[in-house]
Amino acid sequence: MTAGAAASGPLSREQAEALLFEEAARLDDRDLHGWLELFTDDAIYWLPMGIEDPDREPSLILDDRSRMEERVFRLLDTAAHAQTPPSRTQHDITNVRVVNVELDRAQVTCHLVVHEVRIGDPSQVGMAQARSLPGRCEYELRRGGDGRWRIARKVVRLLTRELPQYNLTFIV
Image 1 (cartoon, helix red, strand yellow):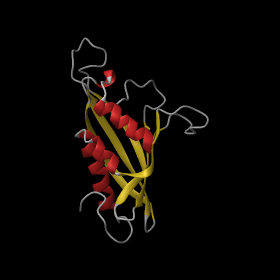
Image 2: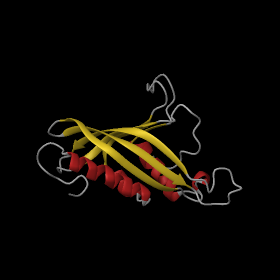
Image 3: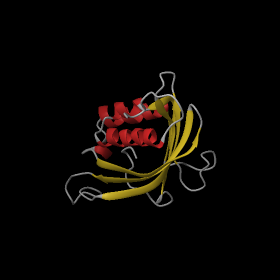
């Protein structure tokens, strides 16, 4: 079954996995416009820090749909110094669970490890050094009018979220 495929009935774990695996593939292939297509028009993409209240503390990332589109524009269409050369990533998704499901809504959790490297001269800080960012994700998925499941909210809780972060200019 393809990612987000239209089907009747509540979301199955197989459908959830297909959507999350498709998201990971689009990110790793730098198909960022395709990545945006997986989200609803009112989507939120959030990487909280410690107490997880964006009104009381800064977030690593807190994007609504328009900020997500700006992020994609900056990464693909501008000379972003922090992504020259661009990061190579591998998003590994495991432990996918559908934890709350209704007919047209579902909450899904998973474990995530993003492996990232920017190829360059090893004398440049942060270049030619592979790193891994482990975390746990929560997704709110909604079925649209076309019957396809899309991501309405993605929350990534990095295990290292309270530590200094180096160059999170790629999409986690």
